[in-house]
Image (cartoon, helix red, strand yellow):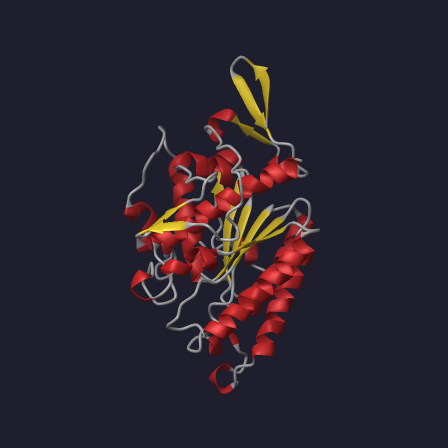
Length: 329
């Protein structure tokens, strides 16, 4: 980080990056950007729990509302995935909007502001805003696919609903065309697999529906298509972050769940050595709070509660700061 004094009234924090989109942030909106953590939390290890409250390892921290805004507002972000990723997207959107729209510093938010159905399930039942028309090239735009922006930074903050691997593949194909026309995003957060790994949901990801027997190799073929899409989409100016699927012992098949997460992890880890991709192991971080009475539950057996979503938001913020430091060297 370098302080550049432009005038007595203006001071900028300059971040040396390969991407011009990540170059400048004024000190006021950065609002004391946190120091670079001593390590990334992307592997989900060494996170301790006290009841439902997580404790970051030494050298890492929990970020405030202003600090989260300072980190995430550096990026134009697209989230792709099912309702588990949408709910995290909406919680973070509420956090960032609270800072951007406030006339004074916001230090806390109520449960209703970050966890109520009208926030995390926006447009699911009642159309409160128009679905994102950026995806009009797709055959059908789901009502919960939303476009948003951080106005003071002119950054995109969008979500496209894709519940199955083949839906993600379709979405990325459209995204690739859009990215070629204009550089719309420099951070893309992707998650998938919950529907395919659930015996009671996977038929909705099959062309043949319930009549089609489940085929693990076919599912992995769709997943490989997605991973290939992401390898082609990533660049020095576009970072890909894959959030894996946390365990649900009531619905997901544990062996299939383990093998699928490992397939993605091995694929992205080997490629990320020469690329710009990250594997965020939320499953590992949430493992002590994923099953039975210790589970941080949501409104159904597939969803996790607010504290689990906030954990991912904090882990990703930590990792992005870590990557910023890596990109600058």
